[in-house]
Image 1 (cartoon, helix red, strand yellow):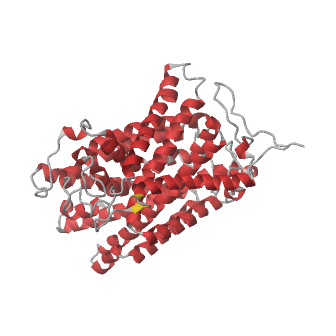
Image 2 (spheres, one colour; image 1 turned 135 degrees about the vertical axis):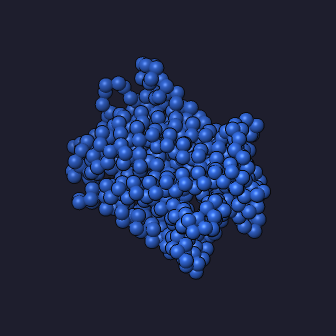
Image 3 (cartoon, helix red, strand yellow; image 1 turned 180 degrees about the vertical axis):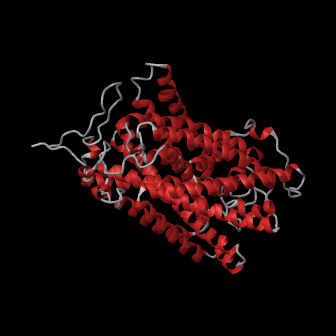
Length: 537
C-alpha cells in the first residue's frame, strides 16, 4: 500500500503553501521593512566599516576606497536578489534556498543550502545579542548615569542583557508576523533617521572645516574607484565583509507564505531592499570615511581598537558636547541598540521558516513543522532558534570576545555560500526556458550566474586571506587563530562542514527526503506545475 508524504501541519494549512502559516499578513511595504531591517544597517556599518578599511591587525585594506567596495558588493547582491525573485515566482516556499536547491540539484545540496541559512543566522545572533547588551547600558547611561554606561564594558552584564534581548525577540516572533512587522516599522524608521542625521552632520562639519584635525579628509570621487586594489588580497576579503552589511534582505522572501500575493510581493521587496540599502550605505560610508579618516589612531577607521564599533568612537566628535549634541549621542546609541535588537528579531524569522520548511519536507524532525493554532507561527522552530542562539552566544563569549570579531568575516563565507548556491540553482532550474526570451535569459540566467561566479571567486580568495595567522589580532596585538589558522577562516569552514554531520545523522533515521521522495529534483517547464512528493511504499 502506498501513501503520500504530508507535513504535520498540512492539515491546518489555510493556503496553498500547506504549512499552516498566516497568509496575507503583510504587504509590499511590510516586506521591504522586514528585508531592510534584517540587515541591521546601523549595527552592520558600526561593526563592519573598520574591517573594510583595514584588516583586524591594523593594516590598511580598502582604505579610502571603502565606498567602492560597498558599491561592488551591491552588484552580486542585486544579481542574487533577482534570482530569489525569479525562483519565488514559481515556487514561493519559505524554505527558499533549501527548497530551490533541492529541486535544482537534489536533496544533499538543498539540505546544505538550508544549513547555510540556519548556521549563519544562529552565529550572527551572538554578535547582535552582545551589541544589544552593550548599548542597552550605553543608552541608559546617557541620561546622566555614567556608572550604568560603564557596565557596557562588563562582560557578564552585557552577556546577561544580551540573553534577555534574545528571549524578548524570540517571544515577539512567536506571537505573530504582524506584531513583528509593526515593531520593525518603528525601529527601522528611527534607525534610518538617525543615520541620516549622523551622516549629514559629519559631512557638513568636514565641508566647513570643522572636522577632526589629523583625521578628517575632503571627499573625492576617486573613493568610488576600485582600480589599483589587488583582487585577491584586498578586494575579495573586503567584499566578504561588505557582503555582511547587505546580508538579510532575503528575509523578505523567507516570509513569502505570509505575504499578500506571495509569488510577486516577496521578490519585489527583495530587489527594492537591496537598492535602498545601497543608497543608505554609500551615504553613511562616505560620511564616515570623510570625517574619521583611515588612520590607525584615535577615531581613524584603521584603528584596531575601535574597528569593531567605529560609531562609538566617532559619535562624540560628530555630535559635540553641547546640550543638543549630548542628546543626539544618546539617540545615536539607541540607534545601534534598536538596530541590533531589530535584526535579532528579523534573524529569528527566516531561520524559523527555513527549519519549518525543512521539517515539512521531512529533511529534519517533524516537530519543527508545528504551528501555533492561534498565532499561526512556527513553535518549535522559533523557540529552538532562540535557545540554540542563546547557548552558542554563551559559548562564544566564554571562549573569547575576540572570537565575536572573527565571526563577521566567517559569516561572509557562509553568506557567499548560500547566496551563490541560490544564484546557480536559479540558472540551472530554469535552463530549459532561458532562451525563450531576452528577459528570461537576463534575469533567470545571466544575472543569477554572474552572482554565483562573483560570490564563488570572493569566497575562495577571501578564504585564503582569512586563513593567514595574522589576519585578525586582539587588543594586545596577538594573532587570533584556531589550530594556527586565522580564526575567521576556521569558523566559516567548520560552521558549514558541521552541517554534513547533522545531515548524516538524520539521513540514517529518515532517508525519504534524501532519496528524492519528498522534494523531487526537477527542471522548470513553462506552464507545467512543479512535481509534488513521490509515493512511498
